[in-house]
Length: 282
Image 1 (cartoon, rainbow, N blue to C red):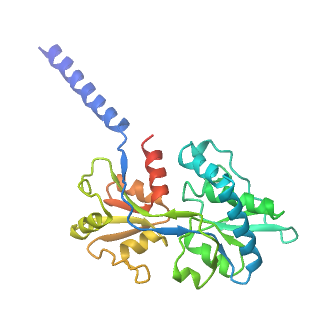
Image 2 (image 1 turned 60 degrees about the horizontal axis):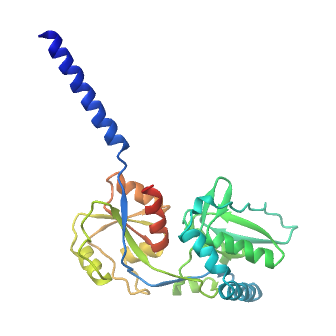
């Protein structure tokens, strides 16, 4: 009898172990609510005193948007495997050299991110094209997103390239190039979350968000996602005072915190949202 009980105990322990192992291997997936909540123009920021550089950038943008170069770059990152790209090496800042210093926040894939010590992304590839055509070495200065506009305004960097949305407030500090991408805000939730399942329009999503209580929503600091959640008079965003807004230094941290159960969903730009979901669901 003791032998039978011992065998049963061993079986029970093994069963618990297998369940625990399965739980560890069962990575929770995430999804994008594929409804555009806003409409925004991305552009590059240039110091107000440097009209010559602004004109040069606009001329290069016009060319690469008309000859198919821009489409090829977009296709590489939107449809291909962004992590398979080679990446770009930044030169070391040197005042004695002819350099183009670009301010970015390399935590906003697929527009800018790092592969080891190299930079990759749509904006970074365009930066390399601009630097090459101007006969300059490319220096990429990776900083907090909120510092990008200030660094250009102060003349520390020549151009801000960080998935920057054009806003009236930012226009007071810098000039913007022609727009090269139309963006929008979207929501990321856990794959099993049904909160927005019945929504088909932005108005319906916002109505659901306004009805929620006791929920926490994450965003990347100093981005349009923050303005959308907390409210902004210039944009006409009412915000959602019924929700607890939680800021993060990047979108990946916000998504991970959602998976950890600390927030309920994340609001972030469309393409970074889709990139993050694709990465987490591998």
